Each structure stands twice: as C-alpha cells, then as structure tokens.
Image (cartoon, rainbow, N blue to C red):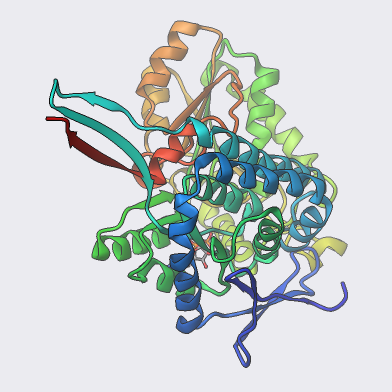
Length: 472
Ligand code: ADP
C-alpha cells in the first residue's frame, strides 16, 4: 500500500503543522497496512482554529447571501470536477466500494450546489404592528460552528454541515473522525481555491478529546455532531454548560415493515440496503418486520441474496478495528440471546481475512428482548421478526430507543398513511419513496435532535433576530 499519507490540520487558510505532535497511525480496512498518520491536536491548536474562525466570522456574515452562495456553489463544482482523488482517498480509508463512494461524491457536491443556490431564498418576515411601528425578522448566523463528524461517511457528512453553515454566514471548525480525515482536509484546501476566505473553514485533527475541547470552547456558538448516542450525550452536556445549541444526528435501528400485500421484489431490494457500506450507516435498515403469511418466503429470499453478497467485490470491509470487533461481539450476543442464525455470523476467512470483512448476516425469530433487536450494530447484520397485525407491526417498529428512519411496504394506501402516522421516526419512506438532499433528515428519541439536509437545516444554522423601528 506504500507510505502512509501524512496529514496536517488546516487553519486560517493554510496547512498547520504542530511540530512534535503525537500522531495516530491509521490502518487500512482492506489489509490493516498503514494508510495515514494523523496529528492529534492539542488545546492550543484547537484554540488557534477557533480564533481564526472567530476573526473571519464578521466579514463572512456581512457578505450577502448571493456572494456566499456563489462561492459555496463553486466549491461544489470543483468537488465534482476534482472528484477522483476524493473517491480514492475515501475508499482507501473507509473501505467503501468504489461505486458507493462515487455516489457519495455526487451527493457531497450536490449539497454545495443546493445550499449555495437556496442561500438567496433565506429571508425573514415583516410583522404588522399597526401604524407607528415597523417590525421585521432577519435570519442571522451563530458565528463559529464546531462540527464533529464520524468515520462512516466522512465526505458527505462534512459537506452536508459545511455547506449549510457557510451558506448561512457561519464559520466552521471541523473535527473529522481520526480514522477518516483525509477528505476533510482536502475539502478545506479546495474551498480556499474556490474563494472561501481564510478562517471561514478550518479543520483540526485528532481523537475524541479534540472533539470534546471543541464542543467546550467558549467561542463556539453552535455544535453540529454526528456520531454515537454515548458521545452525543457528552457533546450535549458540554453545550448545555455553555447554553449553546447542538444539532445531534445519532444512531438508528431502522425497521423495514413488510405487509403481505407488498411488492416483495422491491421490498427485498430495500431490505438489502443493510449491506450498503457493510451496514455502517445510521439509516441502515437493520430490522425486518414481516407479516406472518409472507415471512418464510421473504426470509428465504433475503438470506439467499445476503449470502450471495461476496465480500470484496460486492461487500465492503468494516472501517475500523474497534468496529470490526464490535460486530463480532454481537455475533456472540445474538447466539447467547437465542436468535436463530440463518446465514453469516462470522468473520470472512481465506485471503480476505487480512481485511476487516464480516459475512452478511441474518438472524430470524428475533424478539424485542434481544439486544440485536434493540441495539445499533453498524454492520451487515439483519434482525428479522414476524408480526400478525397492523398494531403489532407498529408496536415492534417503535420498540427501540431509536427513531431515525422507518421503511414501510404495502399496496394499501390508507394503511400506509395510518401506519406512517403512528411510527416514532424522523423519516418514513413508503414503497421505496426516494429521499434527496432536499428532504430533512434527523431523528426522534435517541436518534437525535434537529434536522440536517433540506431547507430545514438552514433554520438550525441561523437564529431569528427581531428589529422594531418606531415610525412615529
Ligand atoms: P463512533 O462510535 O462511530 O466512533 P463517536 O461518537 O465516538 O462514534 O465518534 C464520532 C466523532 O466524535 C468522531 O469524530 C470522534 O473523534 C468524536 N468524539 C469522540 N468522543 C468525543 C467526545 N467525548 N466529545 C466530542 N467528540 C468526540
């Protein structure tokens, strides 16, 4: 695999090298060889990045949305044009399939083009108070946004937040996951080339303590976090101490609910979404709830299709060593809890064993008492449960602490609306309804607070300022 790539922070429009800094060696998901060497920022480096973002904030906020939007769109255009090296870097670090990563690149570029375009559609209201007073509202930026992202979709998650934050006139200090930080640094460099002024987008590298220092920094006025529930709670606590808001996009245990009248071919394709990125997606459809009369038929087809997903060409490895070990632990947990293993349940053997590959796995007869029903595994692991009534389907769907996405399959449109209305979920898709960057995304319950994506996200990156003028 060659020499590991030496990464550096990006602060105030330039690479920032901290001599003598401790470094983390990150290894490849494909064969565990070294891929990057990541400096771990100390508090002085975090403070330098925040200071740079703070200094840049006023001038950036005072540029009109038109000008900011054009720069943000230009970044999207360049990202599309320069895509190959982003795809290569992210495949190398995350282990994603090239085809999956090409799709992610398009989505990342779309965020910049979309938010850059709608920048001009963000305005306030005039409020009638009668003759003598004129009141209006203006959406204003927070200032410095601390953005903490995970390792499963580094480029898209950074782009989603950065595009919305910059468009609305905020400046950003981004802390990507220590395991997958190349594309964040590349994005910041490309942003500078696209015309983003120095200090408007900074990247600090390091492990969780760097994220914690950022979330606790007194000059960070909003924190956007994507990651685990456990870390999300700690970020929320740090924000509560300073009374600043947090946007939290956390985990999921998303059900696909299949009624007997569903189009089973299309439902099957939706269920197999649990193999995308080897299940390392917060919205992964990791539970299948299926009506009794079609349970055997669908379970057999799912198991056959999952078993045919050959790791390597058709299934990505697991990104980090800790995550790989976590998935293997869940195989033991499922066995001890009495779930019926239908296929998989083991790491991949043979030549691929040098990498972090696990076999696509299906468990049947899973009950709400089992941990594989309730807990996010973040691997290509599907938990299947049967139901015999609409009420039971809803109860099972809602029987976890999560509520990010639910997928529903039925040809009965009245039932679809009835069930969708009763699901505790930030997003419901019916019969494979497609979502896009325009559709708000976020969770209820432990899946998080706030919404990313869509116009809705812009409301989270701005505050409403009310101005009233006496005309008397
Ligand atoms: P995962 O379990 O998927 O690694 P985490 O929630 O631990 O998810 O990590 C998501 C991001 O949060 C990463 O960038 C990580 O470095 C960062 N992080 C980890 N611990 C903390 C913390 N205590 N405060 C802030 N950020 C953290």
